[in-house]
Structure formats: structure tokens, C-alpha cells
Image 1 (cartoon, rainbow, N blue to C red):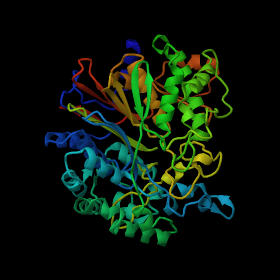
Image 2 (cartoon, helix red, strand yellow):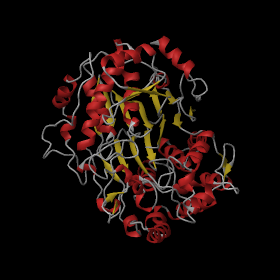
Image 3 (tube, rainbow, N blue to C red):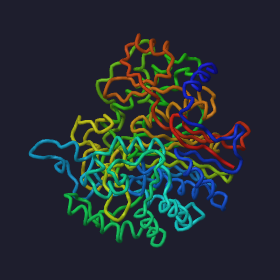
Image 4 (cartoon, rainbow, N blue to C red):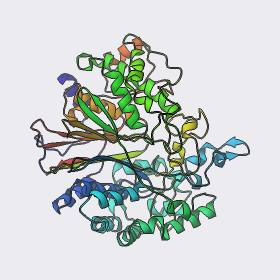
Length: 557
């Protein structure tokens, strides 16, 4: 194992760095995908804020400096452990318009798959702002106005975009050009997209943040912003209106809980599919001695558990307020039955979803980013936030600076029709009025003897779920630190399509073993973006870990 880690470290040189002290941090820790977000969280802590305040600050900064992934125009899912020992889940997922229906994407009887990905019909009501406001009201120590003050300056004064941002702009330039406010914000005077090192100044966004600092989410959901969105939608064939914004609510939900090798795992419930499927896969894998397995055999059983979980996802998962999502998906006997289908010697056939017990009546009441914070008082926070695919719908309503999501593409437009991530769905996740689309976001917290031990999550569409699974296995089964676990090569299988995605970091002999067992491999560059904070062996320090595959910063004090 140690030799494998050394090889992976060598392969990942140049992909990113980590700012964590080897012995950890005793007061506070943070890990995000952008140094400015991590630094904002640290500054909030220096000024007396707790990990909740710091997490909200980091999330809002990411909306400024990492806007292709997240922002006020998107949504967020949160798992939080408070200093008082309370463990909660907060659903700030986007909500479809009241007039949404499957017919909204039909043109002359044909499905227009592009309409859910960009433009007016792609947008759902954003939920992130209300979720952050609730976090501060219930568990923070600072006001939204206090946290926003330096972020407003950052938006107004600008920052130099990094290579990731520049590449995203270049890749999506054609669609961004279709919307004049987006073009105004992200393009040079000669019509070309901003390049690495160019300064991105967002004056309109700064004014929107000022309005929120003064009026709170009232301005966004019940005031001027909602009215501006309605006017733009009316002029461009959209369905969202001020009434949709006024009716939005972020929801406190009961987190999912399970035990894996003596460690309690706390995860996000539906409309996140991530929590359900991380717990499903862990239960399926518990009978295997993963620690003693070589890389190839271990990757095989992981992939087989992923196929079974994603088959269930395609059929059963949706918004629990509108669809009957069976609690039996986490039934131990059901999952032991799925586990028994995993053959260590060959690829198994998964023609369809499983049939969990009591599925009729016992039911639950993507380009993304993830960040986590923790403090010595015992607040541990995991936030996944997103506008879905890069730059969401590509729409910025004039004068607002806020990139709107394209979360409507996370619904199943029609049975068997894949979304932008290749995921298929069924009736449980069909387009409908005032529904939350299914999400892969998987903020997850692990407790040992009731104490926070690990917090993690990831970005990367459906690979979020499998990244979190593999980080947990690295820490729990293999005894690695969070940073060491992030260095392990990843695999991903989502049932449909049938290929097993494998990082080229996986040793060649392991790849050959997988092929011999019958896997169809799709070998490529490192993927995903996972962050974590773990408790150090001394039981007092915190070890933030940043995924070396991407820029970012893990830091503390």
C-alpha cells in the first residue's frame, strides 16, 4: 500500500498542493477548491466566527471566484454537526416552476434535450441563499451582512482567474455568447473569453450582494430580484416567475444513519441520491476484507457494488415530497442480498433495479463544488453546492451578475433518456411542478463514539457518490489519513453506460485483472474533486485534505 501511494504521489505532481500541517490544526480547519474561499473561511474564524460562519463565507466566495460551479443562482445540500452534538441535514436544492411538466421540453412531438441544459427552460428556483441564511440564523454567530462585506469588495475589485476558470470559459464560450449579460461579464472587448490571469470584475454581482446584505433573502425571493427574473423569463419563453421564488423553502431533513465497521456514517437523505447509495454500497462491501485485497480485486468488488446501487438509483430515487422513495433501499437484509450477487471472480449482470422490502408503503418523508470546515468547539460542516453543469443555464439576468442554474436537466425528461452526465431515470424523478430534482451531491459525516471523525464530499456529477465511497474506504478500511486516501486511484461505474471508468493512475496489472474478469474499461485522466477533514490520531487536531487533482487549499489554525 505504501509503495502504491508513493507511485500515485509521483503521478500527481503538478496537479495541486495541500496547505495542511502534517500534525493537523487544533482550532480550525477548512478545505475548498479555491485558495480565496479557504482564506475567507480562515479570516472569519480569526474574527471570532465558528465553522458554520466560515463555511457560509467560503460558499459565498466560491460563488464569486468559482462561479462556473456554484453561486447564488444554484442550490446546496448541507450535513452539519453542531457544537451541541446535534446532527442535521439541510436541503437547499432547487425547485422546479409551478407550471413545469414533461411537455415543456416537447417541440412538435419531439423531445428537445437541449432545452433542459441551457436557456430559460433549464432554470429551477435557486435554494442556496436561503440555506446559508438558515445556517447562520440557527447555528452561526455572525450576520449575513458581516460575512458579505469583504465578499462584496472581492466581486467589485475583481480577481485574476485561474487556468481552470479560463478553460471552462473557452469550452462554453459559444453558449455564453448567446446571452448578452453573460458575454459582457466573461468576455474581452475583442469578443474572446477571458484568459488565465485576466481580472474578472463583477460589479452587477457586487450590487446584488449589497442588496442581500441590506435586505437578506427577502430581496432575492420576495423582492426586486424575483421580479427581474420573472420579467426576463416572460420575454424569453421561460416559466419561472416571482410566485415560484416566493414559495421556495429550504428544508431541514432527517439525516440518514448507518454503521460501517463500527463507525457511524451520517449522510444526506433524498432528494440526494448520494447518501442512500453511499450507505448501500458500504453495506454491500462490509463482508469483504478490502484491506487485504490487491488494487485490482478491490476495484472489482467496488465496481460491482456501484452497478447495483446505480441501478436502484435509476428506478427508485426522486424528490421524497412527490415520489415514494422506499426506506427498504437501506434494509440490511435487502443489501445483504445484493451483496451476495457480487462474484469476486467475474463481472455480474445487473439487468435492472432491485426490489427493496415494503417498497409500496415505507417511504422517505454535477459540475458542483464541495467544501468542509471544522472547529475545536465541535462544529463540523459539509456543504455541496452547484449550478449543475458549467455556468449552469448560461443565463445571467441583466443587472444581477448571478449565473442561473440548469438543474431542470437533473430530472428524467423521459424514461431511459440520459441527462448531461449520462444518468437515466424513471417516473420517481420525472419533471413536474414544485419538485426537487434528484442530486448526486453527497455531503457525509462519520462519527466514532459520537465524536466527529471525518467529514467529506466531492464534486463531479455522479462520480461524487463513488468518490465519497472510496475516500471512506481509504480511511476506514485501509487506515489512511484523508490526504493519503485522496491519492488513491479512482474507479467509477454508474450502471448505464456499462463501461467502468478508471483513472490511468490505477496500476497496469490492476487494469489487466479487471479486463480478465470481464470489465469494459474506460481508462482516462484523473477525475473528480473530493475534500475532507479528519480527526488526527491524537484525537485533538484536525487534518484538512484537498484533492490534488484540482487547484484549491486545505488549511487551518
